[in-house]
Length: 181
Image (cartoon, rainbow, N blue to C red):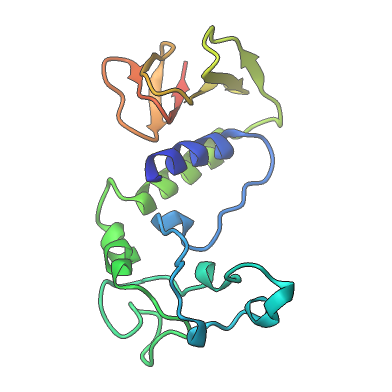
């Protein structure tokens, strides 16, 4: 999950146009699916026969700012929606000091995007592999997304960021990298 999510994020951020990030994405949080019915607040959940799902509460659970406390740093009196115990491992304060965290990955990717973005164009490159997407943005930075399971050779250049580790010039499966030629 997280490996593919990071790859998809780099691909999306490399595209021209606006980019949208949703609450908790930058921390690697996934939706909280087990909110008890008596704690739910989303009106769509209470529509009964009109609505066939769990509502939107699972993606509205307050972010964990610290790894402890009654609301993981959201407030002194607890959060308005229950936060699961596993949130402690995703707290922003914990990820702040971890250079390999999802939060730091997002910060690095967004800073690079701001630095590299130019004209709203891209040039497609034929990779010869149906599971590899390769395009070049103005300024000569390459984006390579490997949707397959096996590692692929990267073009020559300096790796600026990768969703997973690069070994011997090869991009692992289910990964994306940005390179400067």
